[in-house]
Length: 458
Image (cartoon, rainbow, N blue to C red):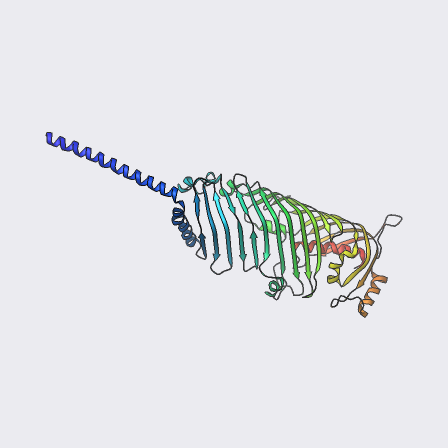
């Protein structure tokens, strides 16, 4: 009996001893792993994180491939960084490269516990990239961005040196189609989106930011009208149509653009200068932009700038947002300027040259209903003299050009339009219907131009 009791105590003692030794061994192993991880975190990150991301992307999106190089993890700063990230579609229709990508402030423990959808795990997250380059081969455009910073604590996204540009020069871009195309390029020194509801985005809620501020913006639009339009082509979508077609509800309280330059051109003969309109030092304020807004919702636009390097132009525009119907209203004014500054446009587009003429002031008020524009244009000017020019040579000395100039001077053109003693003068009537290939800016200009032509006699 005593022997059995001693054996039981000895067995119990041995079990406790084994458990203690095992616990100590596990503790040593864990401590060793922690020490190694603290000393060499990059090896763990590259072994487990990098390979897992690559495998999961390949499984979820078999048409894409990703390559990550130089992955590092700084425990003290809680910062995961990569030297480069390359993402591309296997058919080469899309590619993206990111240099110096880093993300910090993630609550990794909560994330590993399965809280990937918990906004609290990303409350302190900051994502930064040194440079981003994207290429969209089917459309022929690329997107380039300098330093990018996405800050959840600050509720903002800041992009420096943002640029959307064609991947080829104009001749190569237009040579890709036997039909008419629109080429555009947009660049901004800085774009700052503030008041971004990141927590709501992670929960799948509607997205509505407070403001978007864009500084030092340039936009360049060119249409090659020397080629025919695509038959039965889909019309360019207008702002209200784009917003109403969105599946998700997206809103922006205000868009502020400072120091903007806009160049709009139409090419009528390949190899020759296109008809060009320019706007410089433009300041723009847009408020109330939202998709799926109420029945009476409107986006309001206020703009002011310099037109064709001469007069100051102001414009106010209201665009209903409730449906896809192309309807809106706009009005504005233009200060005095030398009318010959319009020659870069009317020369190539109308084979006409303004030899002299001074504008005192002009104003316009136009309403667009289902693609039909009506309204009035008031213009006070004097001493307008025009001449017809050859579309081929640009000369006004040909027989046809001289006869056309004589007709314009003596029969058709209204050389002066100033108030008479009773204060009356010619008021231009706006009448223009949307053409199938009219872009938004082009339609706005041609509707206004119809009223100007009615005043002058074009």
